Amino acid sequence: MRTIDLIQRKRDGEELSPEEIDLIVDAYTRGDLPDYQMSAFLMAVLFSGLDEHEVDALTARMIASGESIDLSGIPGIKVTKCSTGGVGDKTALIAAPLAAAAGVIVPMLPGRSREFFGGTLDKLEAIPGFRSNLSIDEFKAQLATHGLAFMDQPETVAPAEARLFALRAASGSVESAPLMAASIMARTAAEGAEVLILDVKVGSGGHLKKQVTARRMAQTMVATGRRLNKRVQALITDMNQPLGFAIGNALEVMEVSQTLQNVGPADLTRLSLELAARMIHMGKVTATLEEARELAQTKLLDGSGYRKLKDVIQAQGGDPKVLDRFELLPNATGAREISSPRGGYISGIDAEGIGRAAAMIGGGREVPGGAIDPAVGVILEVKNGQKVDAGGVLCRLYFTNEENVEEAAQIVEGAFRISANPPDERALILEVVG
Image 1 (cartoon, rainbow, N blue to C red):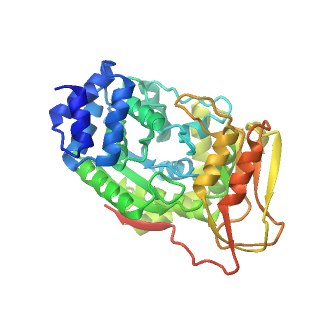
Image 2: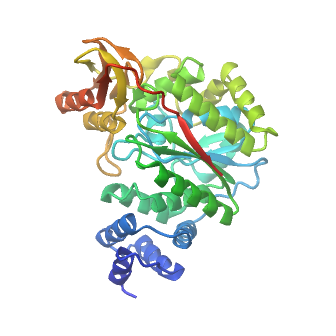
Image 3: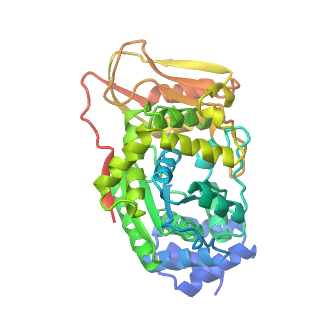
């Protein structure tokens, strides 16, 4: 069977057999299939989709392309948390420490930024000295000691998933729900987690724009997880405005610190606590979800989650003092205020526009492996429903050089919608699946 035949059949909406999916994944992993053909296949999937059998086959083959991490020697249920990506989403750095402080074992193989989305690893690596390239033995040892570790995906662990993830980012097929589902499940299984708590972002600041698409993806992942003997629970959450106030790697680390000290934004705190509670409950630390919510709240209020993140930063070579002294983080050299052209209520914020503006001034990477500036980003001064006066500050851009600042400022100013009347309040957590 020729690769071009498989591409054409998928383009035309036909179902591929597990053997055919194995063939194309294996050929790409070996380097026998060029990027341009695999990109064409991914684009065919973006438009024609995959059914559950194809998702299962793709997931299994990506897992089988390399080794999986065996965490069976560490007592306790291994629970990980993953997000489909959103502007200002730094919940992993809050929910994971809270859950670990409550006694959950939390292995994390987070991703890097793509397009206008910040990656958890990029945020962590904004911390001076922080090391994400742990060996598997170091990863296991840290989990055994601290209950939480963040590791860059080793080249030997599900290499097909890593290669396809990078190609999806470079070829415009990131938002394919079945490809996203297979990628997340392959990574979850390969990292040794038994439970996945998934945050499916839907709206202008996420890959998935429609709630029905997000629901189908969540249902697919729950079903795929069941067939892999994994438990998956998905929260479908609103991403029609940035989460929290900070967008940008070092800026988001600062907001994580504030949130773990219980002085963070209300939306970020609420969602992080709910994710942590579900990690705690699914990890069987508590008998009920309500008890898990109370425990997560306790770990926030008594500073346990904050101390846990400090311990993990130090264990991975970083300077934990950055959570107290923000001047130790990369800081921008310039700032630009964006003022409101008129008074009224914020009725909408185009999260994608905010994210693209932050990426434009250096906060994102155009191609996998590209350089980013950890200091730059955007700090919102207002969110949906808040009142603003004419000339009042909507947000501030932080930059280290003048290139693209003017264009980014125009995009940001256009991202805010201002109305005479306050908008209806939006729900943050839209659905729970699984």
